[in-house]
Amino acid sequence: GENVEQHPSTLSVQEGDSAVIKCTYSDSASNYFPWYKQELGKRPQLIIDIRSNVGEKKDQRIAVTLNKTAKHFSLHITETQPEDSAVYFCAASSLNFGNEKLTFGTGTRLTIIP
Amino acid sequence: DAGVIQSPRHEVTEMGQEVTLRCKPISGHNSLFWYRQTMMRGLELLIYFNNNVPIDDSGMPEDRFSAKMPNASFSTLKIQPSEPRDSAVYFCASSPASGKSYEQYFGPGTRLTVT
Image 1 (cartoon, rainbow over the protein chains, first blue to last red):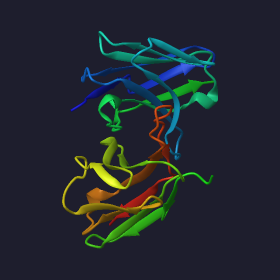
Image 2 (cartoon, rainbow over the protein chains, first blue to last red):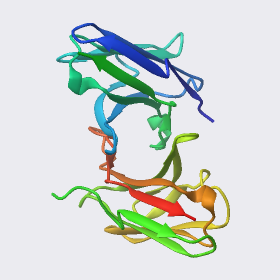
Image 3 (tube, helix red, strand yellow):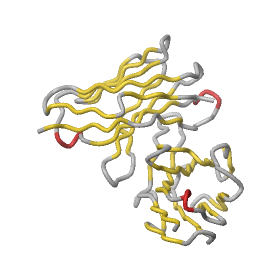
Image 4 (tube, chains in turn orange, purple):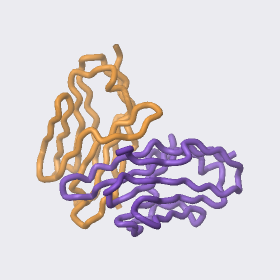
């Protein structure tokens, strides 16, 4: 089955600086890579996703890049703000075969230092 | 839409008791997922349904866990008998599972404590 590794497990960034979280996956059949944000005591929520037919996707201050050859993808947050403090999870899925199962990484706790 | 609804929000029970968690997915969503979240193991998929049919239950830890989806608007996750190691937050999520979106919408979770 799919195995997703995520690092770092914790990350502290000065407000206004950029944050990068990296994930690797093992199954070459995986073609869908979402990122979820979970604030303390809240539910995970999708913030951005990418499919394997594109290499990069942006949405305001967040962007995701995908390297299919190397089987890794990354989340980039620019101009970080205090409300970006949360746990971020990457995930992978192979939607080709009608399988929506998401395999999640272990999460990155991001702290924005004011 | 009210989003995914879970009940109860908190459950405290004694070891050996039966626990039933409930979920109402977003209307029109075809897929429903049950997850367990702990500090040690992170976010684990237990089982997921598509059009009320269980598709993948490989994450169900053991026979003490069972899940049902009798119709498109209701699902249950049952633990019998419960054990202290089952203490966790259990999330239900639903997805439209269309070609346009596979976003999973999570419910608020049920925090289960087994003493």
